[in-house]
Length: 267
Image 1: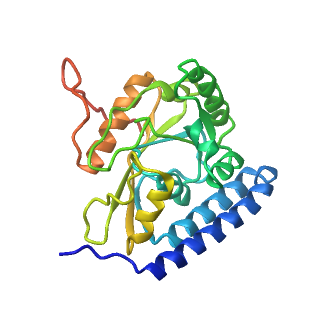
Image 2: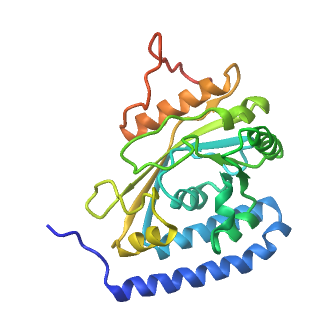
């Protein structure tokens, strides 16, 4: 059976609405740095929710979503698409750590800069210390930070190895790590390849998304992981295991020695 796609007219209407929404975001971003943290979160949450609606992204979420006033929380999620940022922001606004190349994206790059995104030079190993200091400062101030420990995107059918380097601030400031599993499905209920952002341009990604009648995105918030008594590598394995379990995906590696055990978290 041939896969259903939207009409050319529908795609054009969506694209126009998207452009107008981005322009409104540019206007909002001018005042974003000058309002309080609570107002910033409300603005980011509302703008992201509207973006998803324009693109016909149907969002649902479940699990242990961090409460609004919970402090020193880092979200660690698997990475499938540029939509991940807006899906998470629509539920649990945070400051994201992103590759420095995003700063150069038309319009969205400017929005990311003004929204307080923390950029890292992935080609410079020495930049990890700087970004971890920045992350630690943000967490210490009570704001949430979100990272994608895989370091790159997948097509949603697999999980990549979680790198531990950006989780060090969780240990340093005694924060809480919240694993979030992200899954995209199409109108047939199968994993959506149109949402995946891997080895394609931003324009091609938008074209694929606009052609879909709708895309479902599901966020599964796993139980929070308390950092006390754990190092960054242990935290990475905990998060990796929690997300793989939520998505019913195999772990991307085999841990040497005895099987990795997940003791109950303290209440």
